[in-house]
Image (cartoon, rainbow, N blue to C red; front, side, top):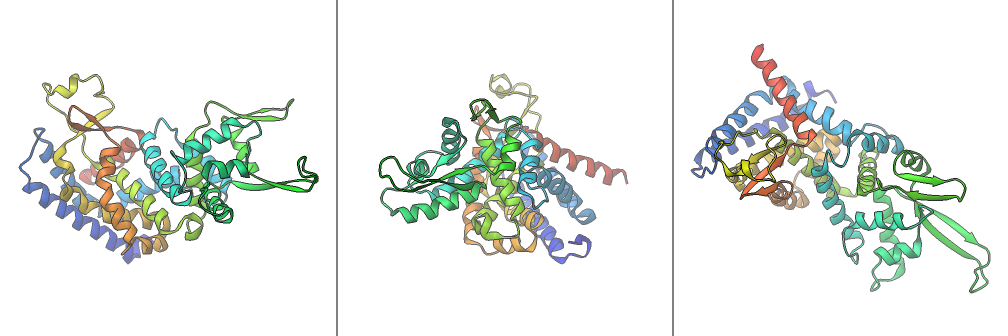
Length: 379
């Protein structure tokens, strides 16, 4: 899309600017201040964003989303294995554990809607299932035992499990046994596994092949990050086919998660007073953490920024098709209501304060903001 002549993109930038104005107005009304200078720091940051974000066709958004979010999590390719490989290698679970936690929670809630009888996180159970076998397959009856609902007919369960398989990009294969030992009749076994080209990628780090015995074992590195990357790869290659990625629920959920990441990245880093007790807490790392004051968490302060940010993320990742699923979406309204709880979920509580852990993507996006603002100021 040619952004310079794109009226939709221009309107989204204007909506974000209006959201900033509302947030600034609300923040300036607040008297609550639990950390000296916090209110002033956030007001200054929001004013800087209002001034600089619309400039040069929203260059800060373009660089942040295109260079940092899309390249790492939604590569522009139609080849599933290529998308998976890029996502898997771009970052580690340790680097982006907050994003992985958010995505894990989202995928689990989505999968539970499919496999409603399942106990515990879906992805954790998938990891466990593949880890227990030496052929890197899950037989259909094992799948039914893990995710099926005994109160529903088998054909219903089968359809639901096919949705679960599709969500992760797994494939089903059949093994025909001409004579079953018990019944002396032909038996067809269905098993689920990873596509062959994905297995080749996994062999580099996550899979150990015993050529002599013909066994495939998972390594200690095999964890839920593999399934999160499979999910993201599936979204990447099928972003133009909404039904293949789970419809509006997926689009709204993904857009909300990365809107939250953007907002956290743009928040200023505070320098707390040397006498603040949080500095003496053993759980606080002054080099890798920053405080997010309670006064910033007031519903009216940050809420006006979420809806325009969600739309901006949706438009950059999926164009007008995704944007139509955000506008007037009941799902989106529910997600926006839950966002402020996500803010608390992805940050730590230390001595009554929310603390942001400075994971790499936060720092990278914050650096883009700083660099562009400096460039504008110098010019």
